[in-house]
Image (cartoon, rainbow, N blue to C red; front, top):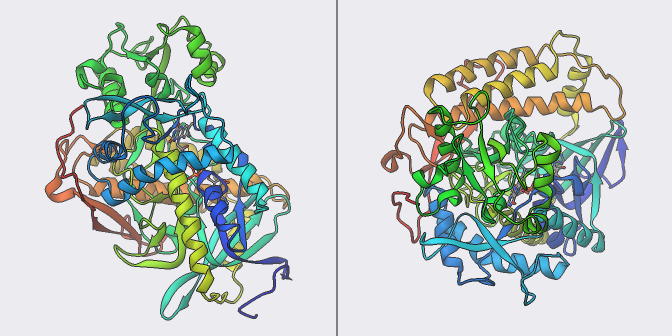
Length: 600
Ligand SMILES: Cc1cc2nc3c(=O)[nH]c(=O)nc-3n(C[C@H](O)[C@H](O)[C@H](O)COP(=O)(O)OP(=O)(O)OC[C@H]3O[C@@H](n4cnc5c(N)ncnc54)[C@H](O)[C@@H]3O)c2cc1C
């Protein structure tokens, strides 16, 4: 087989495509990258979902930028808040870029046609969000630009319309399941990706000079989550299986206000507009934990405080196992204008009327701070300092790291725009001079074998059962509070689930729209990623941001002011427990803000 295969060729039922740049994922990060790459290089966006169904569309509250439209603000305060909010594990050079480029990121979207809410004098309106302050923590500041409580929906639609205008090539409902790598001058580089077409069951090889991963998060390792069913971390899992590192995987964010029992998100915008968290006796308990910011403290602190309230018997309801989000003091007209969708969720899913009744809430797994390590050019790292030429990542799947150990609300919609754009620009520059990387012989073989193995499996295990056991155990053992004991329990379970996973059987053996088959593959990624999360969490003997070890309750800057870098070093199926993962540490970049105690 030739190294280069002409676009449109079909060999052994595998379709071949050739583009300078392949972007995996059509969420905010992927489409923002495409808008830069499309006009400059032959670009394809390959997405398992139709673009406007990506999770970015579910984002509610807002996108941060120090526009200072409604009160004094500047990007330096935004940088400080981001660093402090991330409990000083943030790379400060990256946070400076995030905060500085935020302003243009919002204006870009405005110029593309995004209908932001406006002030009376026609400027983009801004509202409060947790951890965003003026004068280095003095008081909450209005920094979040928003479109009612459907900001992500508007961003996704706007980006998609602009991609359509630019004639970007989309391959929708194509699941990328593997990345093909080849050696060039002794270094591994991406040569393309292999995708499974949902409608036909056919395999496609996309040869590319540069690959950008923008595949989003992996909240489905948990049971109670705000994340969509599709957020199974495929991109992060593919990178992991290639032996490339994953950074800071132990840091997973639990958002304080999921609908109790369901995990469906009620945006922090509610508290930004004045909503108050209360315990069973109606007390505004956050005043006790964070007297300055109260309900608008960063999420890790609020979620932990809520868990403590419940643990100490002050939870509401017959089992004292949830708390209340109270917006009854807001005018119904304000609620309708600024929080229409989330109040409707409370009515629909819990039968509660937010005008007059407090809404039962509980923390819900929300956001992966860790992921594929990149530098500020969105280039993927293969070690602490060395990049993989031609490989980029942006958005929730990546770890730049602007969020450190805890992300501030509204900084992710910002991250996908700033670093999505950077990925698109840098990949287009790269492909101008980069040579093609030869495809290896039979590049789709590995995936075809995996799919055949799953399709023909006649074991006794069911996908949904294994997934549920994993998610239940992650909720119980690797959630807000963690100990060596709890993490050990879930490690041992993952090991047995991995063995049982080899003995699965799927019902649908067909080719067309076989979601059964794909869910089996996705479960494989979930098992891999849950294991890395737990392994990294066991190794970090301190508490910082979203990672709370009850057996190591203090932050330990002397030993742990470092990023975790986890590597897959052997075959998980044959190696002894844990022996297929190696951990390394990477220094945190500190520019202007030496670590301080975090008070709010
Ligand atoms: C309910 C909710 C509300 C939120 N609200 C806010 C908010 O108000 N402000 C804020 O800043 N952040 C918010 N966030 C977080 C933020 O929305 C996300 O972190 C961000 O949108 C992720 O964007 P992304 O482009 O990285 O990924 P996504 O938007 O998740 O897109 C991922 C893309 O990857 C594709 N993909 C995945 N796997 C594959 C595969 N195997 N093959 C091909 N394609 C694949 C998918 O099809 C999809 O197109 C919220 C998140 C949730 C869940």
